[in-house]
Image 1 (cartoon, helix red, strand yellow):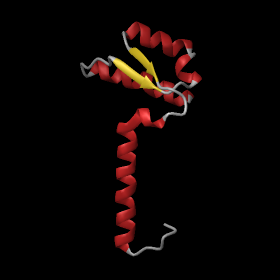
Image 2 (cartoon, helix red, strand yellow; image 1 turned 60 degrees about the vertical axis):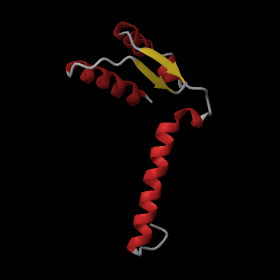
Image 3 (cartoon, one colour; image 1 turned 135 degrees about the vertical axis):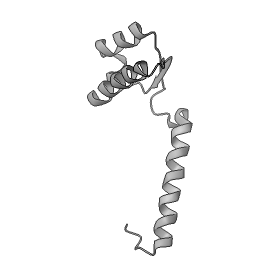
Length: 88
């Protein structure tokens, strides 16, 4: 989780260098995102609104879940077509 916070900080900084403004950030309710003072301060000084998801509710992240399912289906299809054993 510590790396995730740093990566988000890097993303916000990179977005600014390309002329984009991050307006809202949707994160899970992990302590790393809700209690890390430097992270919360970064959001406040950057004018970024943080939305926390409800714990144990993957359905709130439908966009990502759908893409993950699509990728898994593609991988499964490719493995079946290739003739490899199921353990791969």
